[in-house]
Image (cartoon, rainbow, N blue to C red; front, side, top):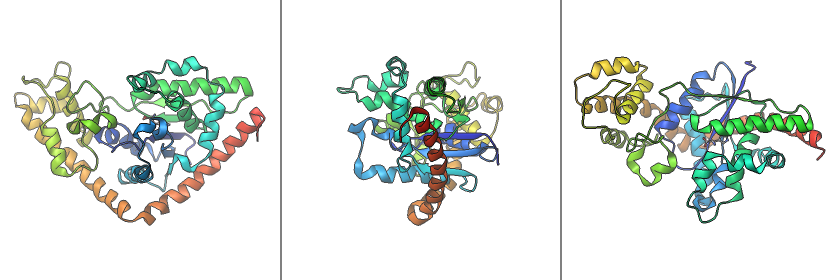
Length: 331
Ligand code: TRP
């Protein structure tokens, strides 16, 4: 068994999109045979903006994200997939970590600043969001956290918290490392290629993202409508952000190098590029959608994966939490 353990997670808020697939799930799948993997659906994090929680749907949304992990190629023979709230230790460790977290560390998180901007009330949970994330990671003696660039600050905070706790209470936690996806795995919004493709933006702007469960025709249409420019420049260092984004998506789907894509389309209108991107994305989505439908039609098949996975990770979480309780003198 590989000795490096990876942990990552996605919130069950909104539908997963092409950015989640190429930037996260794909990377998890690519490395799953060389390390131990724990992939979590972070439903407790979904509560941090309570105004957006739909209690009737949250449980289903969590199962759907778990099913999407599997449909995207996460192999339960080598990777664990579970739902965060099913392991009570996440909340318990989050509290203990909260007590060693200086307020200033949380107040300077850029994600907190942007998520709290313009809100009438900002919940304590939103401020504490990165502490819960740190608990997720530290609970499993995680070595590497494969996430997008936007999570860098949260992983640094996790490291700082592990170091601070170890210093105050004795060596307890593994200090994890961040692993970023390869350049080109960052997918930008189709309607605004200056912003990362995002679930929350896509809620109000349907042409922002291709969802993993979009019908092929719809997916293709969104790509044909993607923002480019009025010129004809494929040079990766001078082309507009929209064109670079489309070439990046094509390369991520087919494995072709960006320079080769650029050379191939030189002198042709962007419609040709878009058509190829649309075909490549649809080819990528079709098998995922077929597998997702199987899991959604058969809840018992999903449970057959989630139940043993959850029990396996529970053992690790309980072990770590026992160490933490001993270290701080509780329990
Ligand atoms: N904050 C992460 C995101 O928005 C989700 C997340 C929660 C996470 N806990 C985690 C990612 C632990 C990696 C590890 O993408």
